[in-house]
Image 1 (cartoon, rainbow, N blue to C red):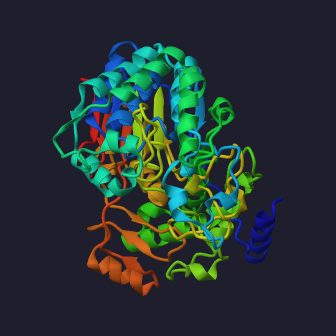
Image 2 (tube, one colour):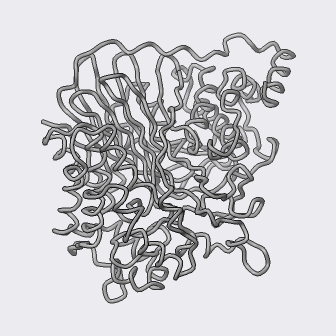
Length: 568
């Protein structure tokens, strides 16, 4: 038994707290007819339409996942793209297979901590977040090849065709894209190829103008023709490596050639009769989500007033986020006590430390700072007519990633190296600290909060996820609980949100989340409430009601271009 479980076991024996601590087993979903139609929710209408187009041509949810993702790489470069990576959670109907495809970026073989240190041995945030030294080896192109070869029905060329067309014909610049390029313009201005791709006369293209990207169309066509060889090997790979190294990066041809996507078993959780499939490491999302749900399973949340439901949720968030950084990392390199962290026994011990009327100051828990996490990511959810499902979250890390573009490629490289604890014990660009479990070493994949998930009940199924940095996991938690309570996706994605992540010891709340009376009650319990935060996240969810055989799709109203559609 792991040390944390032993400690909890001893505390429970002394306190006599074994009764009623088990999470209820999930019921096996009843057999039902196929939906007969499909539903897609994404952050851009052109991407949603691309997925529906591929479904209309005979593709399945996995072909559509390629089409939506590639279209987002074209129209939403601030959040994801061919220079980044992501996680793909899939459910295949024909054999009931649930699989998690890990296409997270990987550290180059030459990675060593001192590369990101300044003259005083401190972390140089500019090196960590800007330029090619900040870039890990991309995984998104390999994910599309893998999906087409192992799960799709159509050739990769067909699934990439809508994105290629959009890139050549152009699309209208929307306000978020304009703001993102404007915000990063000083960094983009450092490299001629970045200027050529993203700036017009030194400035961000105006909202409403037409933006074409023939270079990314050419890159996508190369991948369509040659698969991984069109990106990770040969002439194109040499171009990437030569440009990266000429500007201070450390990529090699071997780094690109050795990159592979990895299939992993999803985390399977059981909460009050619901089965939840979610992301395993190198995502921290599934473990943290599981810890929170296991703690909350000991309470009848439906019978609680808002103040106590929020209080208990915050206390569960606080404890789960505390564990996040200490134990989790790349599963291929780090041994993690996953079974113990997800055990009802451990959850009961954590629950026993929660006072029903008082906040637990985070500085009274064992000290640890969680690593930072980017906010500029994207998520999309798909259910096809046969009931196949895809929940996909992908990113380039910060807005427009590293800001570095290799000439003629049409995409920006990620700055995912900053998601590692580049210098263990020293604050990263977000002012937060990570540990050895998430240190940058050859081939390692950095810890992430991306939490693509599926919620499976006897009569209803939901596919959910969101961007939002370290707040992703709490957003998915709140979305899952709202869906279980009966909310449809259209409401789930629009609900106001709150968040706590251990440190800083503050309850963040979107505007209109709490009434004045609720805030006063939480403060009386000892919580610090930030009641005037901006909104966050861009959640996309689809669901299938098996009893009525109806589909629903919801896309976050916080974003002007978001799009959720059910086939007529």
